[in-house]
Length: 541
Image 1 (cartoon, one colour):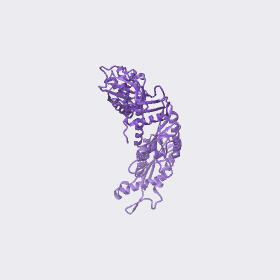
Image 2 (cartoon, rainbow, N blue to C red):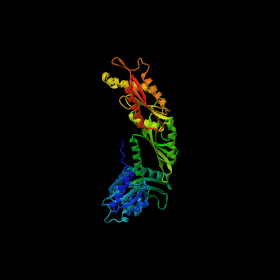
Image 3 (cartoon, rainbow, N blue to C red):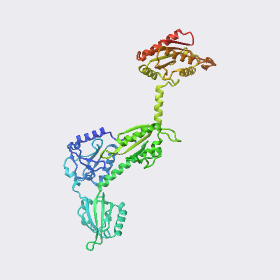
Image 4 (cartoon, rainbow, N blue to C red):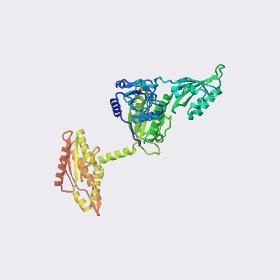
């Protein structure tokens, strides 16, 4: 199972508070989930830290060589809720500062970005160096893509002066991996003839070796009789591409995570269709992209379908989280128990746009849970309720009985001699036999419990009178006695028939507490044991 490393909201708030307290001279910015800077929420502005203004993203204040490091911190933020790294600012590329990224979307809807270590010489405007950095440069090229003229904006964009680029091929500035695409776009422009316009996105190489993304719009004006040329408008889209890469990396991370999770994961759109599901979900549901989720309800056990349909309506209609457990019923496949966790997806305005559903097979968990419940409730040897469950039932009977409650307390006679003479296996066999015989005579709604080694208790609610309680005891004794011949167990070649003493106690509704009622039945049983004249004896308290 993949380890969940996400720091909880309280932990992220603590990180923010610590960074602000320890770095009163820090710079601060707010970022949308896309990575672009947005206005500071009032709470972040109130920290008194210096705001970062001007660049589209924090990559604009970091030297190009450190963009990958900053993106790694962004991915750490997405995975853990907090990210940090050392980077060099554009305003002072010879020194390092620390970039802190903190997820505050749970409360403020933004990520916080803080830069510390800038005290002692760097002013706020110096940090926001890219505020005056141009984004657009115009280039003129001949029919061979040789640069004939280029604007001065190229110097801060690519670190080269216009005069040194005159006479060079524009292709030489393109990243080697993008040159094939650049050539194809150029040939398409020329083949389309004068007046054609083609747009292409290409990476270019800065003098320092870093990459700059441009969206290039080439205008074919080679037919101009006075100044034939191709006019290229080059727009710096590095920040946009970095943000897109961060989003793409985050999406890839999430998809890869869903493939490693030991559960099925599917995403629904607002139209209740599947627009993503991992392999585990596809196998479990026999579903594909685009399938309506309502069709999957047929595989749910009929008794659980209304709850499942209601959960879907709830999460897609109101956006509330819903968790439920349901059973599956599919021909030719064993029944399973599944747990579904449904979580709404919303847009910036809070409108529900779909939902995420996580499916976990909990069949074994349910089996173990039921096994533990059974062990906590029933005596393993006889199948009777154990002492704790019996006493709980007695409390319930005394409090809830409409007419009255009866307790029948039965103790086997000479049971120790059976164990001593025939062995404990024979004693256990006799206990199982007694439980089976008593169970045949327990009235509807009654409960049979084993509360000691050879002590059994029958609890009956809604018993109108002591006489009715006595009739229940008589029926139990009759069942225990059986029909005589052959009723018992065989041990060492002999037939052992149970001998028992019984005490019966009755109480009208609310007249006795449980401990008093069972104590009376116990006392009556001992009275029967002292006065017995046969194998079976009974006393009514």
